[in-house]
Image 1: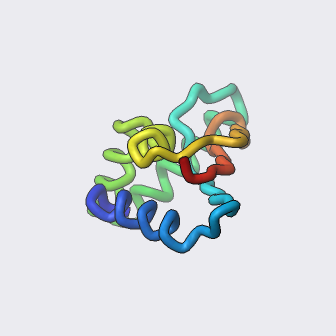
Image 2 (image 1 turned 90 degrees about the horizontal axis):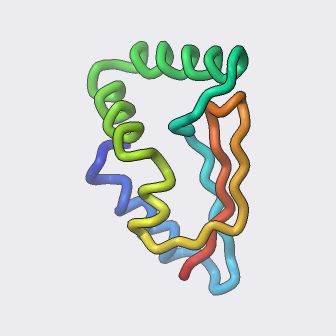
Length: 99
């Protein structure tokens, strides 16, 4: 997702969320990556992002440079109820609620 679309997507999730609802976000984790599984996960993700095209890869690199979901969560004032890092450190799952 391009940089301008990310906050709009979060805003729409918050808009349609019921008062006591939760948001589940799953995306790439910025590390650390645990050898060997995390390194393999990171490699597969990296190659997949390159294969998706130059624009897609540029968006991926920007997303990772801003520290991924953790920055989006903080800037959009969401509260983390649960966080789980999987894939040797390559992926992260968040359960969130509105502030």
